[in-house]
Image 1: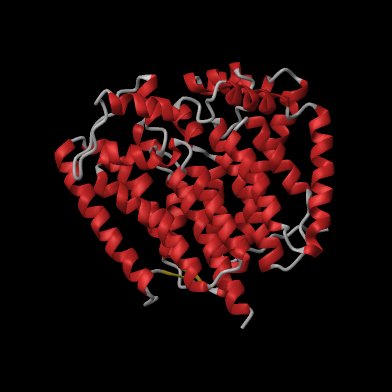
Image 2 (image 1 turned 120 degrees about the vertical axis):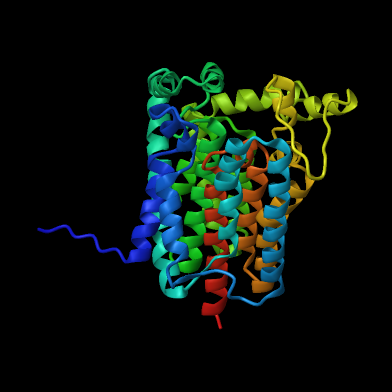
Length: 400
């Protein structure tokens, strides 16, 4: 019996993109090769360029007003960032920021033709599912082996923040930080649900919700756990889908009885008892603002003092963008990354499930500083949003 795998060019490029993001994550690349330039994901970047240049992926061709706003915002973004670069004179850092944070925002405006959308989104979802499955297996082994897997990756990557996670018995996967792992679990469930039920019009397999929920719980991210539960409930508000809510509740009770949620529950209770749901972020921000140690300027950026209070205060990406690269850059990035996708869904009169997906992912990425790091976080976010908004457009047009 012969096993054959047939991919179109766009599917192949999407697969390579997934390999670049999920098989060679930022932290693994920088551990293997100690060079700042390796923070740029060459594999994913090449695949992204190949996709954008393919005839089934188009940019700037739509004449809707929000598309014009996108072009204006991008021009102003790059102009503002050029001014910041000239002011800072830290050209290497600014180059990394331009490639890893600014460049992926161009994807927000990509339109995927219907023929390629279904196939490419399927490949993208499968890459997410593979990554979530590997992390889920690692988490399961952790539970029965006194966190041997997390200990292995924390020692391999040798990053102080990962040792801190390990001491708190939070999942340290091959992807690195627990908050990034939680984000991948959340994106996986949302993307899988929308692709399966809306694009393919098939029944979902609730196993994927359980896997992603357990993964979020093992990361002990309060935001991820809360958001994935909210997503599950909002996805199943219709009467004919109430059976999924009942089945999901029963399965979550079994997960709770297994002890997999103990770490998350203890951390959540501690946060409530100490009135510290944001893990010192808001208190650090208020403290620095009151002390006059945080200053934000329109076209000027500053280097971060990596003391714990400054890091905690600038954990929110919008604030970190404004501090490091100026208010103008932050406003442009905020508009492109978070406002334009909403305008796109509004223009498309998208189903509520797509609104839920985009908003929940946007909330999650705004709760930690991933989008402000010169790593793969911005590329992951932009790809997730562009696939969801294109799925929304496809479903709207297929109903006509």
